[in-house]
Image (cartoon, rainbow, N blue to C red; front, side, top):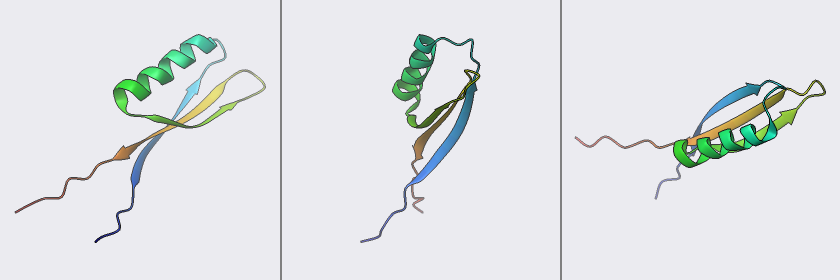
Amino acid sequence: MSSRVVEYEETKVRLDRSVPRSAVRKLLTDQAEYGGWELTRLRRYRDGTRDVWIRRKIIRVPLTV
C-alpha cells in the first residue's frame, strides 16, 4: 500500500471594489461547480478590494507500459 500525497493547483484572484458581492458569489460558485475549484481563503481589504485564493486537486494518472 502506497501513501499518496495530494497535490493542488492554486491560484489567486484579485477583485476590484466595484465588483458587487453577488457577482463574487456567482463567480466562486461557477468556479467550484464547473472547474472543480474550492475556496481556500478570502481576504477583504479596507479599500474594498478582495484577494481570493482557490485550489483544486491535481489528479495524476499512472502511465502503464
